[in-house]
Image 1: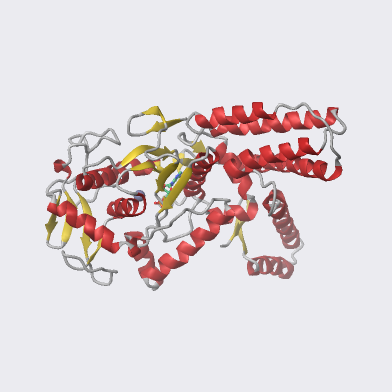
Image 2: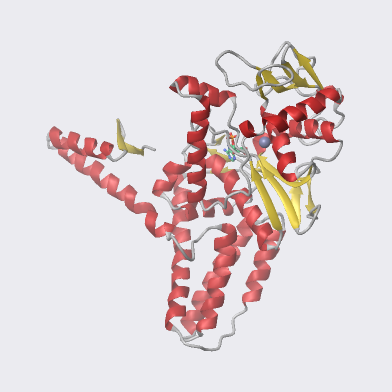
Length: 470
Ligand code: AMP
Ligand code: ZN
């Protein structure tokens, strides 16, 4: 099995440190808001990778951290007049709900930064003792010049790195590239005790401390979106390796961005859709199909049209799965000649090649096509044929890719992609007609009733659109 390793910039044979165990760490969300479908791309592709490793028989310990103390959380807490802890709690719960709806398998552990202060402080202390960190009046920084390998992940040379938006400017630093390990408490901010006085951890050190605590000093896979390569993962390597003198991670994996109008979907640009709003219109399987049809490492240009056609695509798989289940109910024993192994081999060959999910999805569609053709040509292929067909769909398309739900909750039907949209647009048309007939009372009543159920109409020169509130 080959994995593209960001660290070595090539595909490498995957050899876990302690097979059949695989230790995998994925950088999780900062819980200050609902996550958007750009974040969801990273979470879903990490889920597909984890599930394929399990398909291969590996025993995966999967850790995803929740950053629950951070500038963004503190900002939100000040804006809303709610304690930072409550902001984090609310959005941690929302995160759990949303990933469940996205058919993402829960992590083995979801460590929270606030519950790992001892480990974080311990690690910073170790770095200070090693001479890799320095304390300036309660602020502790990592000394980048002291770590020879700095830049090895991002391929950046320290003298080329410039202080920009992503690198904090701070007069206390010896070198502008040095980064915060421990931040001195400011008034009205959450703070914890430490040998340097009250304060809170920097973002990068949280991941190193939690990865080491739950998975050990050297782990197999560490993953996250492309935006985390520098500085987050570069800094994680520096501080972890300076503390342990061991390799921190064997395989670094990074996910390409979900873009919208040629820009990265992001909170700060405001060009995002939350996963929960999208899931009100489209089933999780559709989003997962859209994502798995592109390789995890490359960019993906999002449009609602693409998602709508993915919804149709996943419906086709659902119909095939239903046909298999019906066949199983109604048929007796019988003989068949159908090469299931061929499809398993192609699926595995695709996924073994750096998780080439677009090819794997194509194999599933080929399978469905051949299944349908076989069924049309053979009246009674027998129970075993249907059993094996269901098994193939379950193991590949459902359990690994998550692009169809063979058994259990039929989310595709539940959410029926287009119906809700059509219904709301019908109300919008009725309201427009009412206005044209000068029946403003009816028009307003339609608008208000929709608002009561969370559908907000927005009028503009080009017509009326709607937004579903969370
Ligand atoms: P954050 O909550 O911003 O720390 O992001 C959580 C995860 O989502 C990280 O792994 C990010 O790299 C990833 N991410 C953020 N924006 C996007 C995007 N537009 N496309 C893909 N992944 C993203
Ligand atoms: Zn991280």
